[in-house]
Length: 186
Image (tube, rainbow, N blue to C red; front, side, top):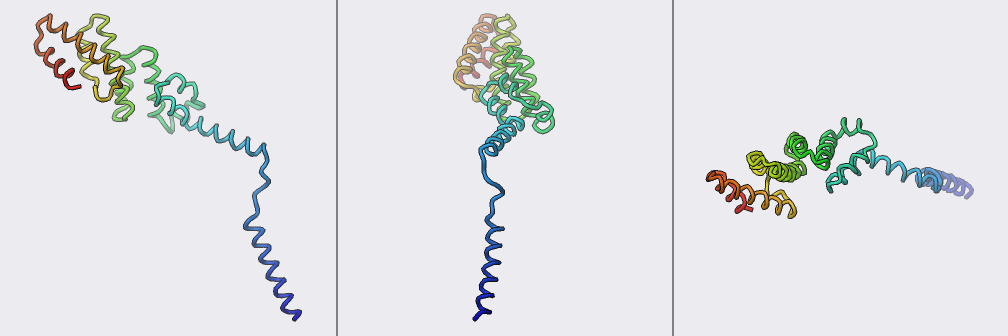
């Protein structure tokens, strides 16, 4: 009988050791560890460009550039995001021609295509105000009306109608018909 007690005690000791090894915590959770973990998580979100990407997607390009912790990290690991933010800053500064070229260089990204169309409409408006009707016409042709929001669509319509009126007065039937088809298609 004493052999059974020793054996059961021996197995209970082994079970207790295994239980302690398996379910033992790594340490007591203290407030400073929680705060440090949250601070590291926030730092990683800023470093990886997640915050900048979110701001840039909503059209706040200057704020996105200010939220970049490491520009070298973004240039190395997310160069398309870095280029998108820089093109957006050009757009916000009013350099529509430079912004259009920068968005065009980004290629086939969905957000870059949308911003390229918005920039083309703004560039057409800028050229129309400067009296460069041919440049405004070319910029308006580069815009995709389907990718525009309502505010830009109304500007697209306004610039297109102003150009159509100008070319109708100068008897340029080819451009009038192209503009009419563009304005009718949206």
